[in-house]
Image (cartoon, rainbow, N blue to C red):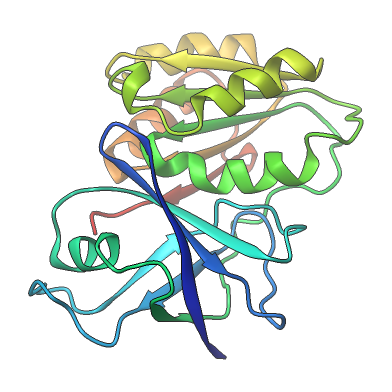
Length: 226
């Protein structure tokens, strides 16, 4: 199903990182962890990849008024066009899809590993669930070049300070298998959810395997360049 909707806000939420807020159509449904496709009628800057892209939803499924997506300002024709579209401009979105569905009930500890804008599906989940009581803890391992480039860092720090079962761990170093071997030993009983660029995801999974985490306790979503 395709929906016509409007841009209601633009925000630069970290260095080189843009958040786009759209009006949520009344029939648009999604679950935390899913993505949508945004299509533009025309581009003001040419883009060899075309006039549409996929983005994970960063807002809560409980927010019936807004849909938020977040992306790096990489300079592509699509992104440049989208960033400079005025508030009120129309775009098309397709119904949400994807099988990377985050847990609605916790039956054991979970670790979220986010690289850059891979934080988006985890923000959707945390915005939805942070006020609930959790029977098991969630740890977020959040990797960025530096704090200035870390989207939603202020919100995440606040969540961590207010929810006893949520721990935020900031990582400002290049990921290596050895790093995740060490982290695996800290969270040996957890289910691992890994989202980010393909190289980061592969490195993380390799380290977790070396650290003794079984494959059926590692779920991944790679964000290819767009």
